[in-house]
Image (cartoon, rainbow, N blue to C red; front, side):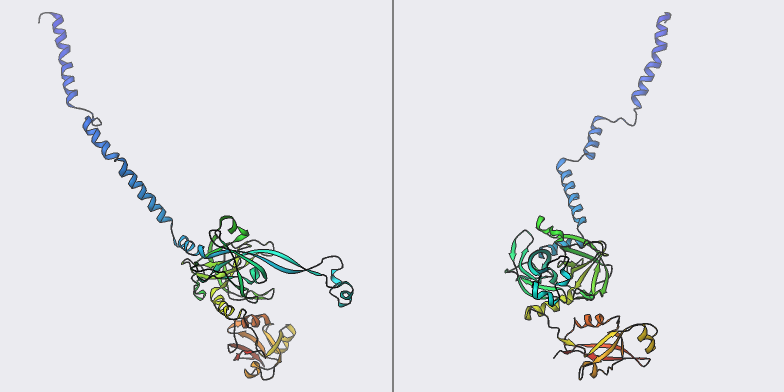
Length: 402
């Protein structure tokens, strides 16, 4: 140990040995033995088959979560919707600078009737209401058709027969030869709620022919009981208003609630006088009215409306209102009464002003006429009458026109 080199080695070696011992005894916490690392990996990464099963289950859960009342209703109703193609014959008048004169009998004796018949193609929608092939659509779609072709979901085409049509209500009944056809469930339009889902299906712009299935649009019931009055000799009362998009070709298709029940038939669109395409609202004939009309069309091929209220009327203008003591022009004034008719029996007189009918304000004679269009002989209308500056109610029972 007297050797200075030996002492130096000993002095330097002892701390080195101590450091190695401490380093081996105290390891970093992030480092584990090999067997511990293998165990953690097995927990983090499950076996491949088990992982695939979990992914498949998750996919099924997503698919189920995408299904809702709308998709279920569409699935239920779609097979009952049909596309309709028609050929109709229309009378067309020659148009030239002198056309205005040819309606005069004097000119007709020289030039004859300047009209001709022309075949016109049209399209629309419809829906099957019974398994034996009865189909409902609009009169303005197929009421004047000479040839009617119905396309079912899937592309099958069938010739249809016109059973009966009612231009006044714009309802038409067709029939195809078939059995066990899918048919709709007709709901109750009296129970329709404003704000509930409304689904419109049909053949807009002929798109049914491209995919052999109806186009679907969704909105809500915007309003009910809409009285649109008389349009082109058709009377539209108590219509269902919806903001579900309805376009040309949708006419005759079903309007459906979220349960898949038909609540109406798509018939009119509001265009604002600017176009023939949807810009906001459409209107459907209530299904309860259609049920009644279809039953009569099946039985008779037409709807009988030979009704009379037994009186004539005219509008109340400012002059008449002032003379009678009305605060403003309203209602209609009775101008003539049929002897022994319903009006006489109801105690109505010439000069009476009809202000209301069945609780609805009467703004013109069309209000009475359109109300009568939904009635039959024996049905009653409760009228609010203004006479000698007083108002009273009376019940008028409609009779069949003699």
